[in-house]
Length: 298
Image (tube, rainbow, N blue to C red):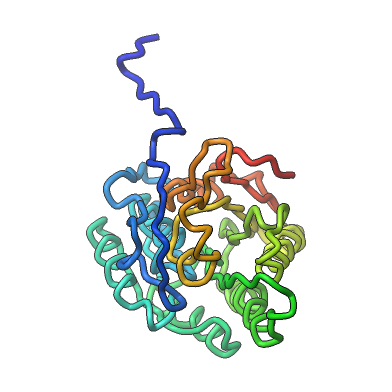
């Protein structure tokens, strides 16, 4: 073995152990204003053609994990439709530019997935803009930290479930008639599904529901040649954390409890989504792939 031809990277130090300053952004938050900036793979992700010719709809694609997935998909050869909230237009335009720099098509689809009608419209617009879809990434999520059950309102509970669970049901249902055999659905769940934080009980419970939904849909759609899987990130540095996703005093310690001793960067999640979307994972169905820095999980 010629070790000089190989690259060995220590996962502990591959990315810095960030110590974010206490900061706040109004929901939903922007990558453009995050301190320190998150690594979405702009300068590091190298594609190998694993998604050549694919057409993907990605929700929550303007920042964080969704943006990293969009960049990776484009560099792997896929055209992408990017869904995001209108307030996130600045981030979405930056992702669009990176997709187009990779020589792929980017379709921008702003709108709120809490709106049932929009969940159907975003699929129709993606199909129109891309000429069809054969990959769906349900990544959009809402996370608001609330320390006490007394302060957790019915409105927040409803909104969290609308975005995190009902939107997956609605968007996937609208997409299935367009998905040919060989198509894929990948849902974003979380380590919170297994180890819920006391201040995230609404969010954590939605992620457990997504795990279950993924397994049920995987069984139902497998005979049609449509594979459904999920990715469960651990603590990942994204705008979600500073737009009330975490208590402000917890930010400087965010992610340091993982066995690697640091939070993940969005680009470290992207290969999991690429794998589950590529034909390499053709015998993987109903699986939740944990990408969490080593935290034990089922």
